[in-house]
Amino acid sequence: MSDGGSLLNGSGADGVVVVTRFDGVTVLTLPLFVLIHRLVARDVRRVAREDGFIGVRFFRDRRARVVWSVSLWTHLDAVRAMGRVNRHVMAARLPGRLGWTTRSGVFRFGGDWRAVLFDSKLHTRNPLTEATQAEKEDAPWLS
Figure: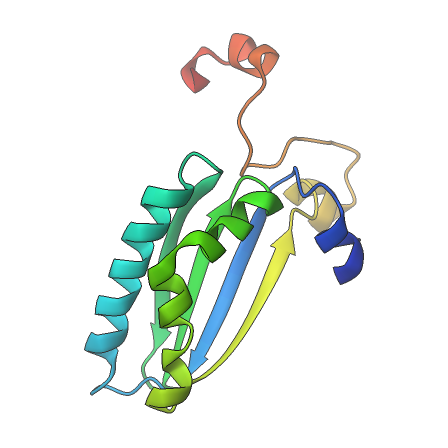
């Protein structure tokens, strides 16, 4: 398992997940959150798709007034493309003005689920990365 320093300094070629938590999103401010999230996601998709952006979704817990944004990226350098998205930069300033607090983290592939759960010796590739040509030849449905 790598520490935060090596994650940020490494190649990050094995895919990453970015999770941002927004606390304090109320029933009244949720429609604004949804609108902003959709606009930012559209712009990130437009700018970063070729860089390695896969997709983003949000989840909410109404009772706890919490919303999570979860995005998938093929590699760490692709995540840095968000800095080129003006709407994302502007939207990052809004939570404090709306009374929301945020926390965010970048997570790297930890291994095949069988290795993580059952200490299996199987090693498969990260599901966030493209299949190799050999994998595609072995499994034609991947093409």
